[in-house]
Image (cartoon, rainbow, N blue to C red; front, side, top):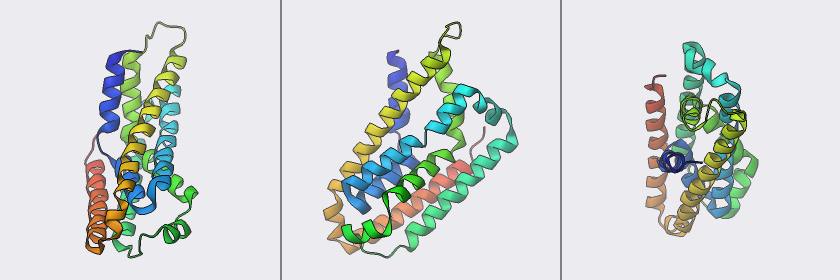
Length: 203
């Protein structure tokens, strides 16, 4: 495994995107446990893209304008839905209320969908992983699986770090209603911005 792969993968993972925003939001809203659950969900959302890249399905998405557009606009719609739900949320961020309102499975489901409905991630796997695989080797698929698992591990570690740090700042947010309102608006606008970036993206 080359150093170039590790450095590039870390740069991609550490760059704040939809998954990072969702995990940070989960940490602020539900604490450390909810942040780790969100990070796990975002990591699991990578699995379909990994499978697609290994089986060649990513090539179809990359070459088919219809398939790419369908995934892209589904992702845009879901991000706008998250933006709306975040903007209109007026509940207090208490541990008991949050636990009753959003189950762990719901958090995982939302996190998985965030990455599942991101066609750029499939294209990324299709274009990125092969650069570090010897096409003449006899275990190409095994090498791609290994690289994908490393990428997933890095994703979980970085996202969990974001979320745990956000959870550590949670008490500061809870004690300031204005900060809480500002935080929700910021995350809502972040989702809108990410939706806009996805909508304008090309294959």
